[in-house]
Length: 171
Image 1: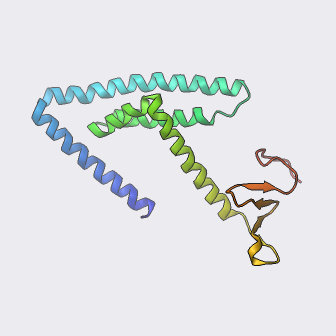
Image 2: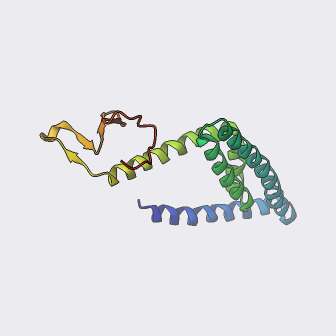
């Protein structure tokens, strides 16, 4: 299924489910209680998102001041932003998902999943952009301009450099 088809399905099914649940909630609780829940979750969500976002930003600053790369903290910030958008959007499903994302013990596995997906996407994009040179025999594996595929999903640098360091100086 293409990305556009998935997005179309997402932006069609979620609002239909949300409207259905809000109508059922209205029938059970009435207009004012339903409106109160919608406004209450939006206000609570805004406050919690601001608080969690401020904490994430301070963790990013702390990691940077220690000379580290704040990848986990940035992913946390993105998930908190997504959570805030979900909480501001009226609906039962989006509010529930948004509140859950604000909980650190729920956010941790979501962050790990998102990190794996982004890394897989980056690897696919990187491999598709690297020109491939084949050895003398077809079965020897691919060599990527200075890197060899070590068959475990990573690359080994044949030039004696640390593959975890990005060197931007021209050769």
